[in-house]
Structures are given as structure tokens and as C-alpha cells.
Length: 312
Image 1: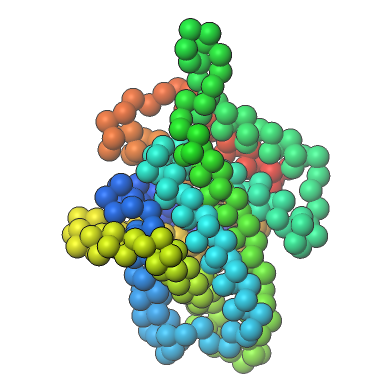
Image 2: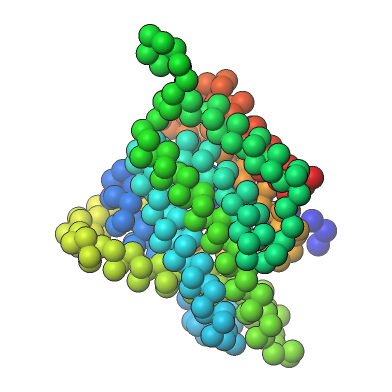
């Protein structure tokens, strides 16, 4: 099918928009750590059932040691570090601004590809990064006090967590690409089409298992198991946790890995980065907030920067 990868990328952007909204609500109810552990558990179940239906096995077939290493590392960077930063960021500054800061992911992915894969970065790429940062600055800076000097209008901690989320997402994507390349190389020549098609979902399962144990370890070390029990007993919170899991680790992340397979990585990443624009209207309606022209402009500029980074 022509443009299959691009269509999948747009579906991913919509899926991540839904994920951000549901995760924002669930994070405020359950806390970022508990929500992440719960959604990792749900995603493991969802993905395992899907693999059994399609391939007959709940485990990734034919995956070798290198595949597990790179995808597990991607899970630690993308899920444990990146999503922990992202969901904590939602609690402090909301998913709308959190997704604006997540536009740092494509440039970070480009830099990570340059460092780890030897991919080239032209001066156009650095210009695109500047455009992205300009858009972010328009969204998060405002004039405050009697001096009317420009200052961060959001909590610093939330902004730093959002930056951390963008870094985790970008680096995690490159590590996932390395893992899937190793997975593809490990598959025998006569492997079934179903196993090949399920490869991104199997890769996501490996990442999810790593994320689950990572978040569990953090909860145990921090002594927050009581918080987890409270979260599990919150029926409304659990409902949003399931929705977050379905549209995030299960559907969105798996399709994002599939999109990279069927489309140019730059084009796919750019289309998937549309979430900051798509989320403005539903977020504002749900939270009864006015839509600022400056925020719309900033969101459009950040997405434009992400697009320029890959498409120039």
C-alpha cells in the first residue's frame, strides 16, 4: 500500500494525543510512578495476548541476545527515564505544555543517530533545531513582574522534566531502531509473514518488561508500595490507566516502530510529532482553558522545526 508508513505515523500522532490527555488525568489521580508501573503491566498483558493470537507464542520468536540488549536498553531510556519525566511533567505543567517540550525528541533522535549510527547532520539540521527551540520558547516564556522581562511562566521543575522526556524519547527511538535491526537480522529466511509483521509489537513487549521491572524497583527503593495499592483501588484512575496503556505502549509505541519500518524515519518522526498541535483544542476544552494565539503559533513553529530537521 502506497504511503502506508505515513498513514501509520498520523495514526500514531492521534494515538499519542489521546494518550497524553488520558495520562494527564491518571497522573494527577495516581501519581506518575504508580501509573507507569500499572500501564507497563497492562501493556505486557495486551502485547502477549496479541502475540499468542498471531504467532502462537507470548514471547518474541527468534530474538537473539543483541535484540534483547538494545530493546531492553531502549526500555530503560525511553520508558523508565523518559516516561517517568513525561508523566511527572504532566502533573506540574499539564499535557499540553508537556507535548510541546516533547518536540525536542526528533532533534535529539537526530543527534543520537549521529553519535551512535554515524548519521550525518547538515547545517539545515542545526537550523531546524533552532526553529524548534524558538517555538518552545514562544510557548513557555512570558513577560512577568513590573519589569516586563521575559521569564519562564511555568514551574522550572516541570520544564526540566519535559526536556528530560524529550531526550528519553529521542534516544529511546534510536535504540529501538538498533534493536529492531538486530531482530530482523536474527530472523530465519523462511520465517512466517505473521512473525515479521509482529516484530515491532514483540520489540515493544521487550521494552515494556524492562520498564515494568525498572518502575517496580524505583517504587520499592522509594518505599511507595502503599501508593501503588491506593492507585490500584482507584477505579476511575484505573480506567484512565487502561486507556493510557492501550493508546500508548500498546498501540502508539508499537505502530511508531512499524512506521519507521515502512517510511523514511525522518518523515515518520515528523508526522508523529504533530501531537502538540493536535492536543491544543481537546486539552483546552477538557480543562476549560482559553486557547492562546501565542500557544498555537509556538506549537506550529515547534512542529515546523521538527519537520525541517528531517525533511531539508
